[in-house]
Length: 321
Ligand code: CTP
Image (cartoon, rainbow, N blue to C red; front, side):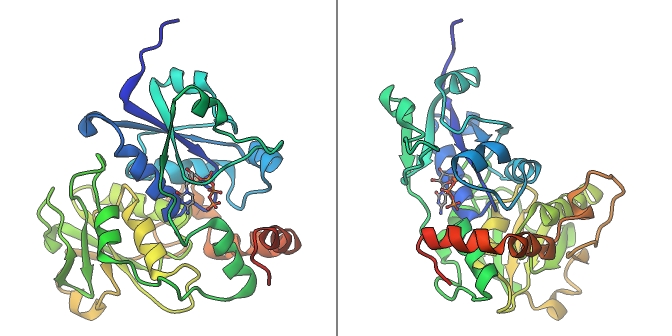
């Protein structure tokens, strides 16, 4: 069969457990490697829980949760389910992707072999910069110890600008404000921001998981005429830092802007509508909804229930309690 490979189609694959801004950063950088950005397509191959358990160890987030979280990332065009742990040429061919992109770390399979060696050997591998300071391991460590991360707590303007980029990876899309809408940190250029045409969703969005993302998507579905602006509340007891929550939120395709640490009273009269987002806020009756069962406490319990295993795993990665 003749395969038409396109320079505008790129493949990324991985576990994407606890999908965080490091994963989103790799996807965004990969999306920016295509020849014609407006025609770019990013295929995100995700491994099943079984494949990850066999090659690396158990995941915290389950297969369907990881698939749907990746589907909500702004720069991801399509999620390819059950992607092989060791990247295969015929999978890239099937989707017309000329190359695979991966962060500059080495990923190995159960036998200790480089998962990308086959792709490297045939010249279909590109590398992007891994995002420093964020990892699933570190977030689990905070849950195990109750310690909070103080390092790089706030995002820089450059980070906010980068994660505000639109679907094509280049257009200036999202707005970022601090405290109130007069204080603009990043200005979008694709649409004019108008609080009277926007819905403000207030919350902490800790562990930015698919239960929360689903709530944002329901809000969007119920208010299709309004732009979605997140009002990111902040207290020191959140597990994820302000920066981690901010950049994860900006990576979400349902979000049009964010107000960091909003002055809620001041904003009350300005927005067309304001809602609070937490567990069980915007209930829909679909039995498959993540919001029916997935909360921050459920995720913490998953870690606590397998505490010994995670302590051992983290210690092997240099994070001892
Ligand atoms: N990635 C990244 N920066 C990070 C973490 C991951 O750029 N801080 C990239 C990886 O290099 C890979 C993609 O995200 O290209 C998916 O990574 P994944 O398979 O989920 O695994 P890990 O690299 O193990 O991520 P983590 O350490 O957070 O579990």
